Image (cartoon, rainbow, N blue to C red; front, side):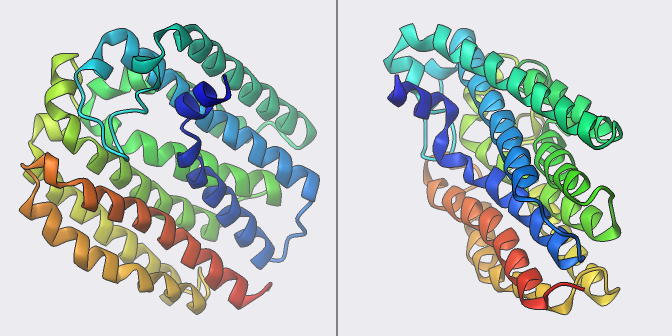
Length: 298
């Protein structure tokens, strides 16, 4: 059972949630707010439950639609393959998805009751994204592109800051937008190997609609925007200059982009670049956290 849980919950991908919460918490600390350990633990638990829920729903619906039988899995795309090997675990997967979603809702309502109800403005769309991403969002190219980033950037990062600080700020918005761009790119590139399989089950994400090569251009644009937002935030003093440490992630982009365009239409050769993309999506916020810690509280 533990093996099934780790597979369908995609435990190895939950680090992204921890980074989003850590980024929000560090930004709160740097802004001079006192972090409450119990509150931070609850926010982290709610974020992890939300991530587990969307992963489990994705595993269940992809198994039921037959997509899992069509995809060529990589370490970064195509699902975990758990239900292909253990079909009887599909009921457990659905229960896990529903239970973790209910825990997310319950935790969110409790936080709203304890603080104020305004964060529900983010929480309600977040819950809809968790359930609807695999079944519905994947049929709308632009929404499919931005939904993952909005979930982790705006809903999770901005939402965590809102709950921990009791307010939002320009810093919180900038960090949320940067994470939105990075995570949207993470999922965009992970769709490249699955184009043919996804098309067969009716999905219409960007690589299907405009092709992999044009989608690589979209990826590049979003990546450039994330760095431009960082520079704008630092030069306008929204973020401390120490956050320029995030520019140390640029060597990854220098290695990633040429390979992406070279092998855009050869998905079997893209796996190393999918790995670089995952590294970039983790290293960028990790360097931002380091910069905020270096700057110290205001």
